[in-house]
Length: 351
Image 1 (cartoon, helix red, strand yellow):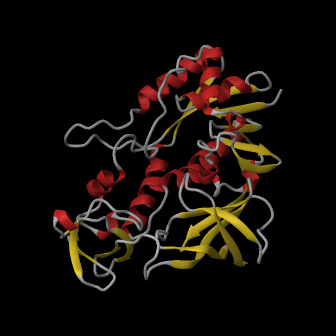
Image 2 (cartoon, one colour):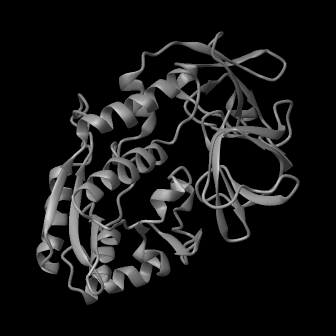
Image 3 (cartoon, one colour):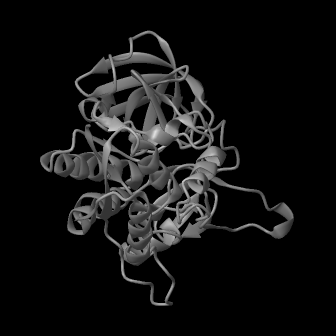
């Protein structure tokens, strides 16, 4: 019987994944300790890894499987948290969950599990696999967007048991297996911040720098507390000088980090900052490279509807993509993931 190490976070999905795999594999549950910041001065709670670990241990005990803890807290701080802050400081918009998946879950965890004798690893991600990497059955929960950067060589040794189920069915399975976390709510927010707002976390770790908000003509229309806190497409967190009678939403369509300016528009789709082409760096393809000149679908934000695009060029970890519909809400640092209908191809980082 093959040995499989299952990443158990203490949540329902990874717990059910372990239960499903027990029939066919020699399962070991593993809790990965990440980095958790100190509480805020006001005493606001962060996610407590001890409580999550305790829940994972209870599930392992119920399933009668061995349980290990891998302490990746120092690595997590350096690889994920510091990288995130560095990117925001430079005016880019990273996704820490994608960094975590690539470097921690499918990097450090994968390597350590294999060193300890595991043939495979598994997680509770909603991703479906059947030779090619595809979206999960539950499209509302599909997490392929977060795994595009994982090397295909690693994915060949990974299983995603809940990818074949709807979330409602996973809950039912948890009750069928009598798992102690069957009724536990899903976690929200960034992996290491928990319920804390990302903007609050950034403001605690990056110095404020007051600046102005300008419209597309360069006219000052408001103020902000630091251009590095914001990303393209946002419409909250900065102030606009207008009376309540003429109040209308303004969207960030550009940033000038040198001048510490946010550039806004009342039209989030059609404005002077709209782009019909994006350049990707650090690309990773999960199968064969996409074909130049062929149309594919893409997603630049988690859960957004797929949109059409055309591959113009691919070379040395880079790609140039033409967008069928121009957009002004794409920010440097964001992930851009490609699909061929329901087949998950991989992606890159918007330059």
